[in-house]
Length: 448
Image (cartoon, rainbow, N blue to C red; front, top):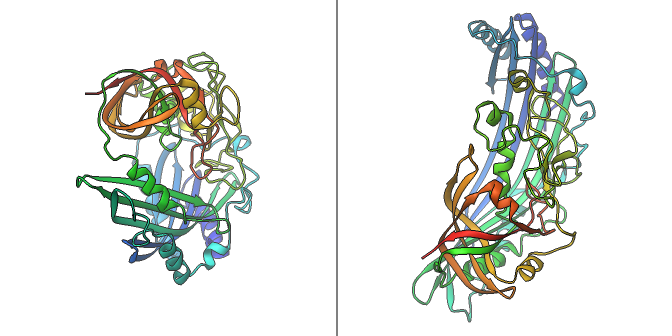
């Protein structure tokens, strides 16, 4: 955790920047610790402890801008670093658009860092013996879960970790913001071998901000189910199929929308959503909200890297694009009003009604392909065209009938979303984007 001495040192860095000739400055102190226990085949393989502390400085000197970072935070060394950084900044080209955000846009209610209820002090008290015990308890290798199966477990790699992250941001306009969070997580990858000697892998993970309520005991079993379900997978005939995309991988179809709404993409003419704000380019059933103020959920945050206050606001509202993500600098370059720099906590809302599951979507479509993994492929950020490798299952009458792999799904994002057939209500709160299972009709697949 950041100490009172480190807070004072960060504030003093601003004063030093002023003494070095900067008209304005922003300082961000980041501090983190992570303890990790890696297991291999049910035994401890690696124990690691990582600590990181760095101070980032944005200097605004005589109409010029420079960004610098150091992990040497001794008072004399830091003073020397700041004076040298100011000197370097004076050598750069003038850029009058580089300014601090307007004070009225900046966050004023992140004083302690704990407002989002993401920090559990118990995480810092967990010792290695407790971590090792939790990691070994969660492991499935050698515990007989493959007994009586037509496959055997050949390897298991697990990682159990605890982490704490603390960040303090201040600038010469009087801004002071803090964000503190902790994390306990466990992830495991298993590999199985079937009777023919073919190998299949499965992965699963879980995470909570604190310590209480965390249970890694089911992760290995879920990973085994995912691996064994792939046995015998193969490509099927290409053509148009209904498509259901599991929530764990559905970000593959949502993240390109968010990137296309970035000011950097707009400024570079590298977005398929140019001049999109206010236009209904998506179906009525698609609403994506930015929900950065959900307490106790990873990803929630009161401010961005400039100290600008985040807001709960629509990104896409019933199919209509509501906003771009524009930081202070890009707002000046584009001649647009600034917003937060990115979607802090995007949430895709269920449609046509809340409470729907993946199975509900499969039942409503009847037949199609359930996508559980995207493997490789690419997308064109300027046109929205995409081609992704997939793994998953063919389903008929709402029931899974066989695993599929070695196929490609192709199309264009704007067209794909017009084919939206439903959105479930099963987003995992431990993920940074709250994206549930998605369903589409008549999607093009290339197969055998």
